[in-house]
Amino acid sequence: MSLESDILRTAGLLVETYGEMAPAGAHIRADQLSDKGDIEGSVNWQRIARAAADLLSEDRPENLPLH
Image 1 (cartoon, rainbow, N blue to C red):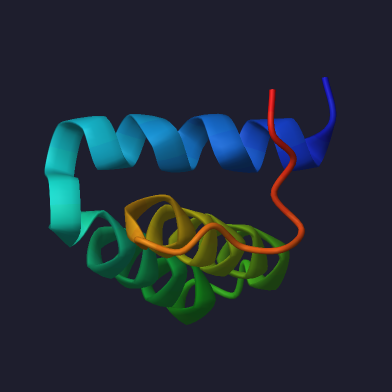
Image 2: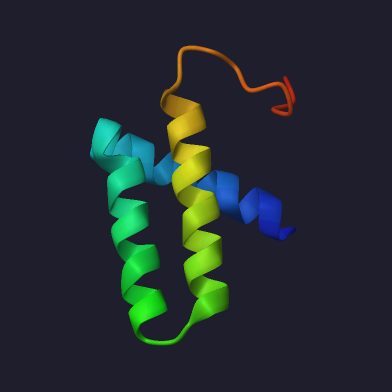
């Protein structure tokens, strides 16, 4: 499984669980990891936050494939 699919799956689970608060929660986690020096983890959670915001958006992002 690719990192991108993990990002999208995690974002989807956050949206299912936390709704509109999902991007904020992912940003909080990114900040926590950054504070601990885990830059790679922080970057991944920032990507999750963006993916969650995209899932909540009324407009479909151009790079999001349709299945």
